[in-house]
View 1 (cartoon, rainbow, N blue to C red):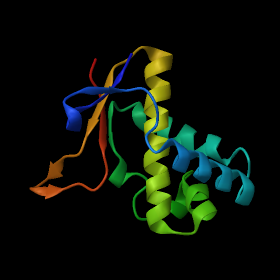
View 2 (view 1 turned 180 degrees about the vertical axis):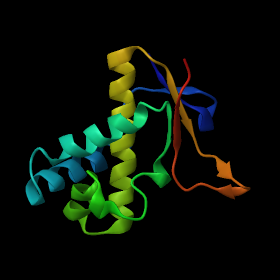
View 3 (view 1 turned 45 degrees about the vertical axis):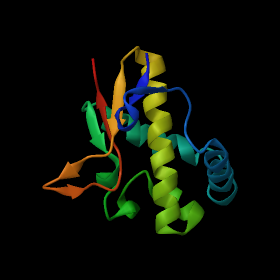
View 4 (view 1 turned 45 degrees about the horizontal axis):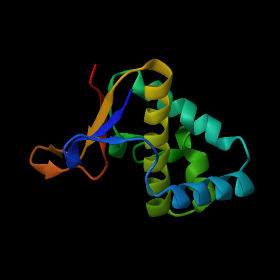
Length: 126
């Protein structure tokens, strides 16, 4: 089933955006941290998806060190780049979940209390 981008009218997403950046980040992670470090980060995010809704700006939060996402920061040593990498990992995980379960998921950029949320919110549609 599809992943739908509701910022673009429900357009179906079939691959992680910025694929070349994602591949470069994955290569850096494998080289600097550990080749299987991505498995830990993805496992943590797949757990987050069990709730049916997740906003990437609030995961992992301000303290990456106490989570399975810390290797992403370790690999890049830059908060902004690690956040972008995390966003691509999140999208990849949702695409994997859609393929594995047949669920339809959507995402968009939303506000909380009138303030734009920086990251995307992913949610199960059905």
